Image (cartoon, rainbow, N blue to C red; front, side, top):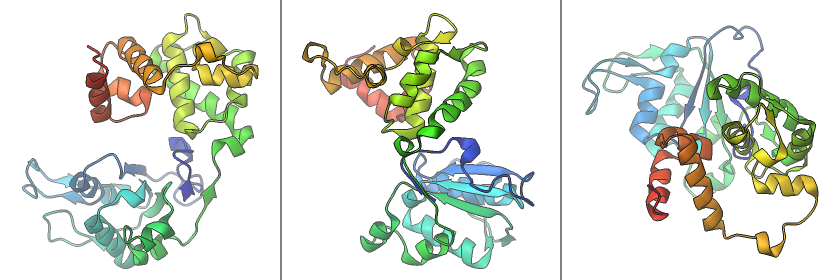
Length: 280
């Protein structure tokens, strides 16, 4: 499944999740871009004790845990060459070994691969295996960006708000009519991740349980008003970024992992930017 980065919330990660007979089976996901290659392989295949430094006990991988369920490989193009070769074998032979193991295990899981990468171009550039591409490209689905699916914006927004209420301690939070119009008017270049982060940020900063347009980033408010931002209000990207990072760090009481999640960046990137901008 190819989509703009990223357009699917977790419950929509498989277009056939509700289909029988796997409806009630495990539904597992691996983000291939967020982990080092060895950890991605460990998450997928599992490992035996002593397979690598830090492997102090046997760990079952997602292929083993999924049983007859579904495994979603997010950003499959980020797999290392070795990881691509191992995944190809899984698809061809329906079997694998844990890292450091010799026992061959059979699988019955369904694999769904997600990417925002142009895989044919990656194949042509030698960055992705052609044989693996053909194995994965059996039922391709191209999902348009959120700006081309306006009818999905508010249902997604309600889904994210429902998921975030308890997490942020705001069980009664709801969108005002004006906030709904603002969300529908914005183009969402960052797709679902930007939408989710905007809603979580609004929950952090809103003084009441009613989320208003002013609780959302300036770009969203401007899109709703239809009035261009004046030159006197324009700021450099660095200034906007610095203020966003500073506000998020303060709101999360400097919990780096949580702040990075809200901002949609990695912990490492946040630490680098924190140092760059001289934030405490």
